[in-house]
Image (cartoon, rainbow, N blue to C red):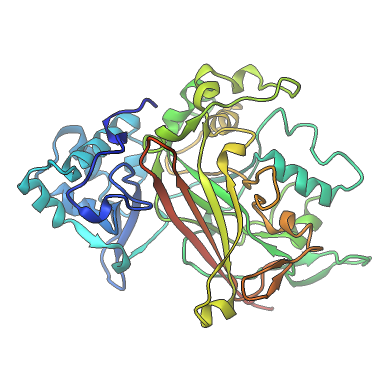
Length: 440
């Protein structure tokens, strides 16, 4: 997507709190679904600006929008954003540009007044999953994560499976257990084979892990039997959020013979409330390529546009807050810092691969990027890598150690984009807390 006037870093808003905001300046304008905390209001679409949520249901009745922008805004007044997502890039841009104009410092007094009537402080709202997710698919696209985990799971063989460098690997997850940031979840029960044992046991997961990922929401889908060409793939991507693919490693490794993840993954997936549009991410694109001595993508996974700008420079942090840290108001511990630019496959390639056999993607479907890990220590996107399968526990700021997650631990994911000559934008945060297992 080309750069345009909404990316100019010097543009200011008349809403002063938005200017220079770490996550939500006027150059971002991400979408969520919200209502006021504790109310019986209907959920509806909103846009983040500074510390406020712009209520799109109120805005749709204000009289300041017209034409395609108004139609797009009206599609955001429902409890899910599927009707907006399906409209496609032209409608998305039309509304984004209209909101940008209404928030820009040269907006007229009546326009500013109309927007002020739509603003709700973010600390007064609650969020829900922003779309009706018919299907959730999780990819496996970090070569660094694959090598790190492969060395643990298959120490006597090549850590990479033969197909990893030829196609974006994925499995179908559980859409019903996708939850919004801040939703606690129970440690899962499951069957596992303990080290040295000859029979499995049924018990609470003992090796609970997080996975740092990004989530992709599908906009317009495709007709069953008609694959999406990679050159058109990004026209089907509505936007990007943070995603935590919680993983029960002991359950997962016992069940993954010969099929893929099932109970080790389906108990919970957390996503951040804010969806950052691909248009907002345009300044942070990077070339995508492979070293010449590695397999190059097959033709259906290759395009000039993907090579020129398929990668994205998105910086990511993982923080852990133990129950003791929380109760005593101690600082959280940053345990990892990495970047999505290290990923071995792009979003466009994931969409093309998903549909290449004729699978019909649907508006509001969710794709996970797979764990995001970098090439150096401290860039691991999961505890199993960081602790080498639990052998080298990490130490929190208060001295507590973790081989895997304990009950009461909260994991916080954060993401942002920054570079010289562009306004920094962010994703907010994705938070989840581990509750004790419900033993039965």
